[in-house]
Length: 306
Length: 102
Image 1 (cartoon, chains in turn cyan, orange):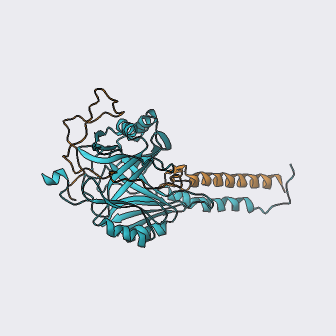
Image 2: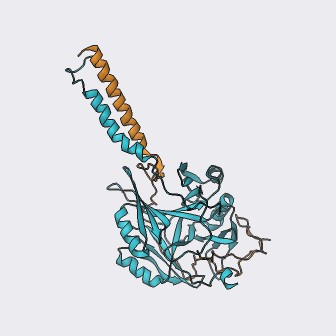
Image 3: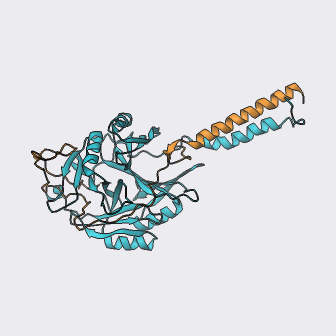
């Protein structure tokens, strides 16, 4: 083996030192973690409840501007050398997370909100999901303070996450305007997809389809609360896939859709009166991530009427 | 280059390479949101398929939550096709979303 000309004695140690300098911040960042879901910790658990949402966006700064301008959220940055993440807060309470993932040039990707459903045991739930022909996209992993979570897709391709929160689940309270209030699973076959979620999360399933309706409309419930609807994908376009759609509570859907447009977003489904008597709309943020707006007038629920 | 100096250089460079490799593993994350995830990212790459089109929500297309207590459709599956899921018992009333305030 022939060596090049004598190298300076300090070169090897220098390489080592430089490498350590690079690696140290990353290693130091490891303990950085998401805060607990519930503070102070509770012992409440609501399996099947949507307890967290996360936006994957190509531009975190623009996302903060958009959602801050729309809902009045403020943000708490959680930066590491390789991750840009912000907690969105409403009146100091965490409502969701925003994660920046830059889309490589030339790639077409659809930013989206990821729906986290509460479980007690992430690993046992993983087994159930796989048994029921779901797919694992990211194996359950423990995040300090937050709990254990993983990402999956159902047999029809809708992506969702599970979270076994180590601090308990948020209490069952009415969402305030600017908080997430409802979720819908839009599926190719609501019937079979509802069966999948029932097997995994133990939902009660109610068929809310009216005689006059042509599309199936199911309600998933746990703890005697409605947790989500399951709706059929409108079948007039091939460019549709099963997905979860989450709705934020608003007081005036018309006004908010106008605001969405002012902030650079677009209206995908114009405001319309829905089954509960309030208006709903579907909009997309500046990057195309879809979400819903939903009016909910107090006194509309059974509990309140009683 | 003396043998001792060569060995020292070799071991130092090897150590550096190992650290660089370890750094790559840490930064690589393996989480769901792609690459960078140290502890707040989950992995791979959560972007939906591109080109999704909304629309086709006809007048009867409803996605909102029930108000609670209203009737629901408990089909008579006696002679027809049963759903893939197990329907709630007919005695159960349709629940609503939580109404208790913070």
